[in-house]
Structures are given as structure tokens and as C-alpha cells.
Length: 466
Ligand SMILES: *Cc1c(COP(=O)(O)O)cnc(C)c1O
Image (cartoon, rainbow, N blue to C red; front, side):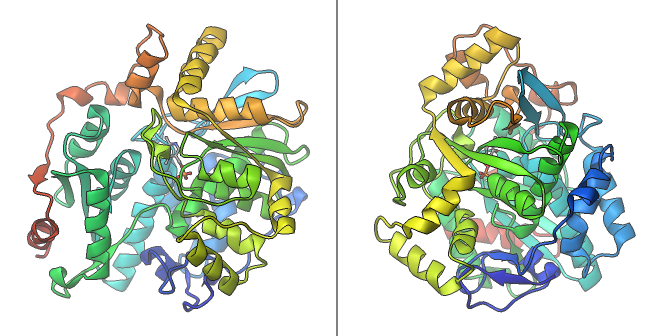
């Protein structure tokens, strides 16, 4: 399978190169040139498969040129055996025909583990084969950093440096990053804010001379194709558990960068009957404003109780725009260049086409808290603030009560105790047993000044073969 850029100018690549590349050289994102398509009969035959085996069926067409089947199977077995539920992505019923899919049973308690646990193994496999080494450099304000660190801690060919803003991430989130032990893991607390961290990462990718030509940077942010690929699987899993593919499903997805919900869109294109996808956002609602009024316009960033969805633009939305424009890279390039300067719209028929599948809603902090409280009172079930936004949007946007509505449960409530407290509930979300001692574990991180040369100097001195 080959991968092409959404802006139509960068060279097509194979899986290995796409895995190691962030943005395409033309500024676009890589997507498969064509998607595998599964018949209903084939999907039906997957009923009852263990998660790792289903993952193999769904993903193998994407990687088959790069990885022999047995090696890929082994990688998937290892990846999903560290999850703490036998079903890996269990469903919990909220009401008649309404469900939450718990995607937080992995090592860092958020859905990002599904992709990043696999990504670490894929990277190490490909780097071993090529006898190469990479330095992963990333900035985090929340869940990505810890999931990436967990995913890479056993990698022999990867050193990972994660920047977080000093004293500006929650204690649970910081401890999840800084208590993972390993020679290749480096946490840097920058005396600045998240934007400062991001700027340093961007600048370093732009000029990697500080590494002396001896290694190269790699990215694990959500534009990495392999992350999207791994997220397609659980849409199939949920559907098969609830009577699919012989009935269609609706999904509501707490959305930030549009990675998770784009995977659902791909599942549909690969043959899974999905009749509705709900884009659930917080007050950072650029996608909701686009879906409701065909106007794509950046607003100021707002800080909310659902920090993992605090974004101004959703990078993966470009992948949907590419399809909506008949895969015309030049049209996407033109649209996004105009969007960087001011509000843009797309042709009405294209927008209406998107609206056939997608609905959207924006949920503010107060309604998030009300929803956490309401679901707890109805079911004694505690939602994290991101999932609560998904559930609220699902209820507001539902088209057909005969179609099962599944909200993606993106994080464990214990990661966000402040939102639970703010919702007025007196229950305290408990960390799962494997993390109960998080607050006693030894932390390791280095505080550095808000200076790119200081951070680059630190990386240059500390990667394995430096
Ligand atoms: C990352 C994240 C999201 C947003 O996912 P996208 O793929 O960026 O849309 C939602 N909820 C939680 C808890 C997350 O960590």
C-alpha cells in the first residue's frame, strides 16, 4: 500500500517511511492511496475474535509490505495484553440502546494507549530492520506525553524527550510521565507555557543540526498515520458486539485533533455500517461551527475542564477535507492557505455531503459537570469530563433511537478529579489497582529555562549514543 499527501505535491511513500515521517514535505498529511474494503460476510466472520486478532484483520492490509504476518500478530498480542480488561475495549450500557466504550483500560488510562503502545513497537521493529536510531521529541499538556513514554519505554532504538510546562499540568498527569523509569526516557519541565514547549519542538524539527547528524527527530503526535490506523479497530469491535454488521451503528466521539473520529469515518469506508458520527467538542468548537454553518474560522484558545480537547485547529480535519474535495490536493492546499488568514467555507454540495454522516455539538464546562452528575445519579457510573461531553452530544444529536449509540470513553475519571469535584459529587474517582501507588513512586524530571538552546543542548548531551 502506498500513502499520498493531502496537498498533492510530496512524493508517495510506503508504510515504513510514513511511520517515520511527520508532516509531508508539502505541509500535508499522509493518507492511504486506496483503502481495503471488507464485505459484510467477511466482517460477520470476525464475530467473537479476541481483540488482537480482530486488530490483525483490520490493520494488516495497511502494513503488509513492511511487516510479515507472524511478526505483526506477535506485536499486536503484546500490545493489547497489557490492557487491564480481557475485552480490551469493553462496552458499558447507559440506557436502552445507549453505550459507552471504555477505551481507558491501557497503561495510562486514556484511549491514546491503543495507538501509542503499538506505535512504539512498530518504530522499534522498523528501526531495528534499518539499523537506525531516532529521538522522539514532543510537547504535551496532558495525555499524549504519558502514553508516548509508556509506548516507547522498551524501545531499543528510540530515545524520547517530552516537554511539559513546569507546574502547569495536573499532578496525576505529571506523575504518569515522570515515574516511568528507563534510560531512554527524559522528561523536561520548561519554565514556560504549553505554547513555548510546542514552539521549541517545532523549531527543533525545522533545524536538527543540534543533533550533529548522528540521529534524527521523529514525531508521535496525532498526525502520524499509524496512530489513526490503530484506532479504526475498536469501531469494528463495538459494532460486532452489538449485532453489526447486520445493523448500523452511531458513534459519538469527544474530539480535539479529529484523529479518533476520522478513524471511525475510515471504518465506514472500509465497509462497516455506520449511519452517524457525532463530533463532540468543548468550547473550542471550530469543528462544530463548521458543521453547523459551513464556516471554518479560528478563535482564541479557551482553557476548559476537558484539556485534552483544548485546540484552536484540528490538524486531522485536513484528511477529511481531502476526501470532500475529491482528493484534489491543490484544492486542499488553497483552502488551508486561505484558512490561515481568515474564515473560509467550502462549496455547499461538499458541505452537505459531510453533513449526511456527521453531526456536531459543543458542550461548555457547566453542562459537562451537569452531565457527569446526571449519569452518576442515573447509573452510579462516573464519566471523565471528555467522555461526558461525548455522552451529552450523543443525546442532543441522536437521529434514530433504534440505532445503537456508542460514545467513545476516552479517559478514566481518576485522571480528572477536579472536574468530578466541580460537578458537585462527593464520590472520589479511585485510580485502578495497577496505579494505586502513583503518588508514592519516585519521579524523575529536569527543569530547564524557557530557552530552545538550553533544551536542545540537553537533548544533544543525553540521547543514548551522544
Ligand atoms: C486526545 C484526547 C481526545 C481528543 O482526541 P482527538 O483524536 O485529538 O480528536 C479526547 N479525549 C481525551 C481524553 C484525549 O486524551
